[in-house]
Figure 1 (cartoon, rainbow, N blue to C red):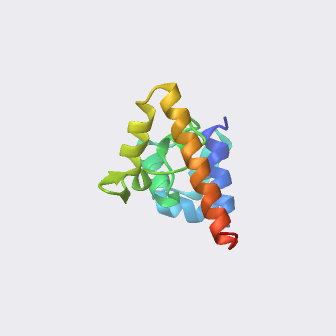
Figure 2 (cartoon, one colour):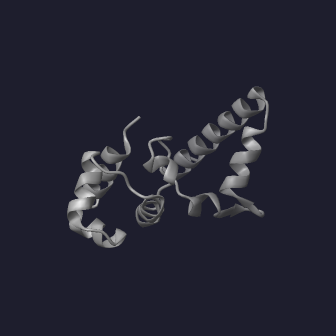
Figure 3 (tube, helix red, strand yellow):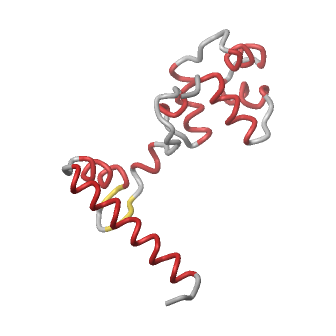
Length: 122
């Protein structure tokens, strides 16, 4: 997994932003933010949260704890019949390994069905 300094640099560059742009978001100087990107200084908890909100990613992603970028807004999003993404994930993870594999197989079939329908093959 990447370190936080590399992650924040990659996110900034992906958006074609300057260090001074992000420093303004965090209420700090470009010099301080530059040191954070170099790994010479650490971001405060408040800054990590602000960056997660700004980039719409999770704090765990910023901290290099997961490769999943999805932020809390996505986890709280209603997806169907009173289910949020987070609830669906929690319930899927509570299943046995056989149950989780069945869910994955069902998702694969649904995705294949939608792909076929989009191509007009059905």
